[in-house]
Image (cartoon, rainbow, N blue to C red; front, side, top):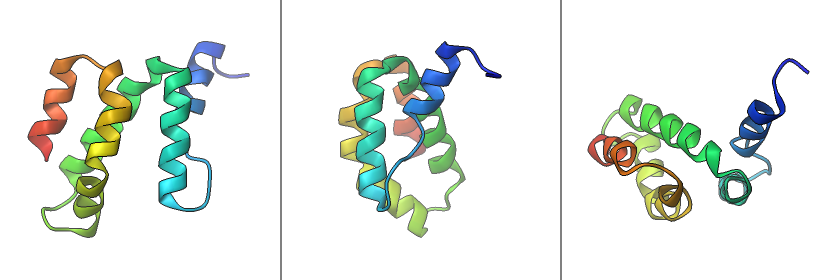
Length: 90
């Protein structure tokens, strides 16, 4: 009850559900289709994570491995200029 329904919807859309990482990401992608306004939040999170992960680290490699699926699910809902930041981060 602390947040408006609009904010709660966005938080729900980017909250992982499931056990395995692939399952969690698939759930987020499905929820973002239902709440596309959350895509920019997810993109900002990914940009921050990629920029913070050292080159060659397991995290950077994981994000690189998820890149195609992430782009397919998120890019249609965000401005190109925002996506450019992620491209530079990789």
